Length: 181
View 1 (tube, rainbow, N blue to C red):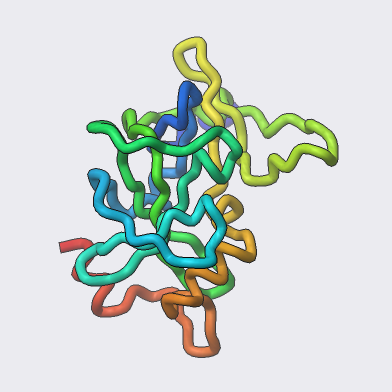
View 2: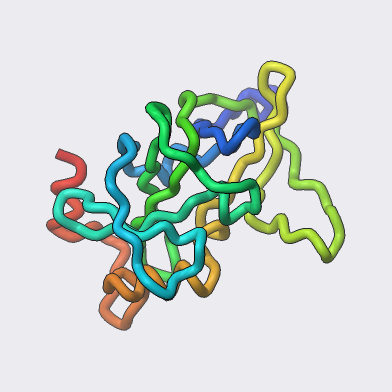
């Protein structure tokens, strides 16, 4: 039975921010978009690049590179916006994550994923779910729900009426079903 546990694996979408490779659980990813025009929203944090039009809906976009203090994503042929679903309480919000590039869907054996290292109270690494090892490189596995859990991001999603409210439910709405067609 121990052999069965060791053979379990998880699938991740890998993306780059500068020279670093990050991964997001594939089940959090709704879709991947080519870079599109982002409309800046005044008086939002710098890492909140603005909103992008996704099938008629305004979806907030976060520059992950800026959020992590690695600089700013510069537009190129490889720049992508990864649309992710964030779960808060009983509600599901949709956010865009701006990345330098998207690499591949990668399957990692669970025994190749280590817990995040403890780096002391001065370093905030609670958004890292683990560190995977693949092809002699380390891949930082992000916890999407924690990356997008800051007050600023919650405020932005509520600005667009996506935040949790008394009437929020986890089932997709009729408009969400159009995303999958």
